[in-house]
Structure formats: C-alpha cells, structure tokens
Length: 116
Image 1 (tube, one colour):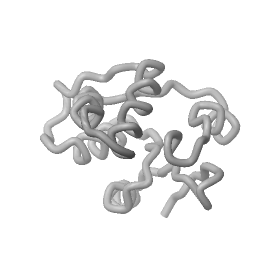
Image 2 (cartoon, rainbow, N blue to C red):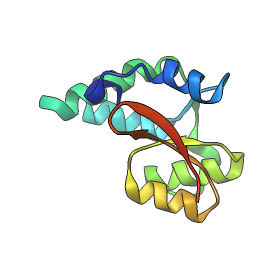
Image 3 (cartoon, rainbow, N blue to C red):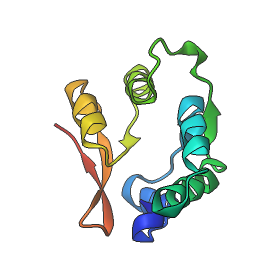
Image 4 (cartoon, one colour):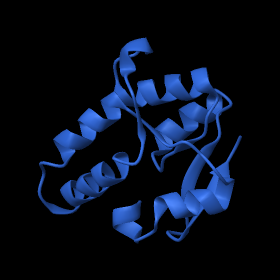
C-alpha cells in the first residue's frame, strides 16, 4: 500500500487506532525478501515493505502450526486477537470468518477497519 499509493502506513494507523505495536511474522519477512529481488513494481513494493518491516517486532513462526504464509497470518491473528492490515481479499475473508477485523485501504487514500 505505501509504495503503490504513497501513504504513510504507520501515521495512518496511529490516526485510525491510536497506539499500537506493529508485528511481522518471520514467514512474511522471508516472503518479502524473496519478492524484493524482482524487478519492476512488485519488487519495489517489496523493498518498501522491507523498510517498514524494520519498524516492526519480528515474531518467529515456531509456534504456528500452518505452513503457508497467509495461513500463518490468519492463525497468529486468531491466537492473539489482533487486527491485520491487508488488501488481499482471500486473507480478508478468511479473517472475517474467524471474527478478526481487517484494516484495509479505502479509495486508494485512507485506511479503514472492516469487520463482518
């Protein structure tokens, strides 16, 4: 989101929810590192995300039972009852099914909390 729509993710989150502790799962970090090697828009977005990841608390995935990164995000959110920032529709719907709220970009300008 930040690379594509030029928003300051952490400032937007603070305005939306107040104080928070950003976390990133080690599996997500590994996936971003792989994507960052690519050229073009996707690689640039991944490199931007890696810069943001430096401001996050790294959570090892040793306590998670699932293997796919998306499933780990869902499992972690359910275990810790925390909001997830994503625009991925499949992940969002799976989180909703578990009663977890999602923070998503609205109209390519502003973050909003979605719950279903």
